[in-house]
Length: 456
Image (cartoon, rainbow, N blue to C red):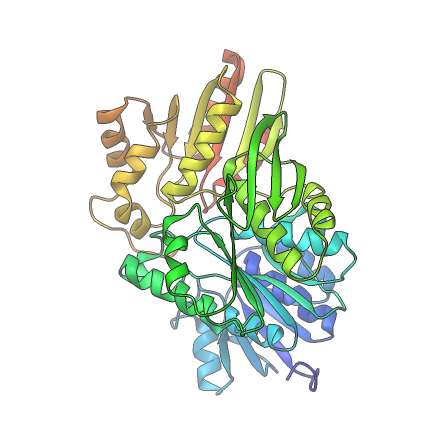
C-alpha cells in the first residue's frame, strides 16, 4: 500500500495526540495527503498544519470529505461523529497501531514496549541510531530534544517505534527486534487481570522472527517471567553483572549519573544526562538492542551519552537558586514511586512539594491503596480533581476522599480545587525559601503548570 498508491487521503481523528501526530508527520514526509481533527489547538496541531496537514478543530462529520482511510486514536470511540460518518460511507477505519504496523511492515522494525519507560527508551534508541548516521524513521510518544520533535522520517531500512500496550493494539506490530522495559498492572480496565497483561506481553515477545531479538529487563519480576515463555532469541539487561548487559558502580552527579556498563569483555564508564536507576535501565535497553542491530558498543555508549531527554520526563520548567518546578508524566503508582525516589534524593536539603492530577477514575479506583502509600513519601502533596479522560465519574472515587485517606497515614496532603488555587500555592512557596516542586499527571496538568510558570 505505502509503496504503491500515494494518492490516498488519510484522515486522523485525534491528530493532536503525541502518538498520532508522529505517524502523521512521517506520512506527510512520505508524500501522503493528510488531514485530521482535534478538539483544541495545540503546538502539535500547529506544527502539523505547517508541515502540510489540513487541520479541523472539533470533531464533525463534515470533516470527512474526499477521504480514503481513517486512523483513530485510543481516545476515540464509536460515538464520534467522524467515525459514524466513515462507517456510513464505508471508509476503512484503522487504529493508530494498525497504521504503524503498515509502516513497519516495509521496514526493519524495532519496537519498544512496556508499562513504564518506553518513551524514554525509544528516544534513547532513536538517538543512538541518529548519532551513528543510520537515518532511521522514528515514532516516539514524546517530544525528544535530539530529534527536535516526536518523529523523524529517515531513508534507511530502520523504523524505531514505541509500542502502546494500553488497548492490546501493540499486537498488530511485527518487529524484527523489540524491548520489554517492564510489565505492570496498568490498563486493567482493558485487560481485566494481571495475568492477561502478562499473556499479551508473551505474545508480543514471540512476534519477532527466529533471526530477531528481544531485550528483557531482569530487574523486573514480571519481565523475568518471560524467560520461561519466550520462544525467540533474547538478551537480558540489569544491574551488577547478572545480565548480558549490566550496569554497576552507579554514582549520582549534578544533572545526571555515572555508571559502569559491561557486556562480555567490554567495560566502559557511561555518563548519562538523566537521573534515576530506572533511566539507567532504559539506557541499558537502548544500548543492548542497538548493539544487537550492529552498532559497536563504543558508539552505542557515545550515542546514549548524547541523549538530552524527553519532554515531560523530569523536565525543568523553572530553575532558580532556591526554587524549581519540575514536570513529569508519571501517573501510575510505580512510576510515581521511581520519580519521588529520585526527587527526594536530588533535593534532600529542600522542602519537597508535589502537585498531582489523578488520571482516569478507573485507574484511581484500581490503584487507590497504592496511591495512598506512594503519595505519603513527599513532604507535601497537593491533589487536584481527577482528570476524567472521557470516563464517567465513579461514586466515592474523588480527590477529596483520596486526600483524606492519605492524611490518615501521613498528614501531608491537601485538596486543591483548581489551577488558580495551585498558582497561589506555588507563588507562596516561591516566597517561603528553598523549595522544589514536582508536578505529576497525564492529563491537563502539564499545560496548566507551564502557563503558571510563564506568569511567574
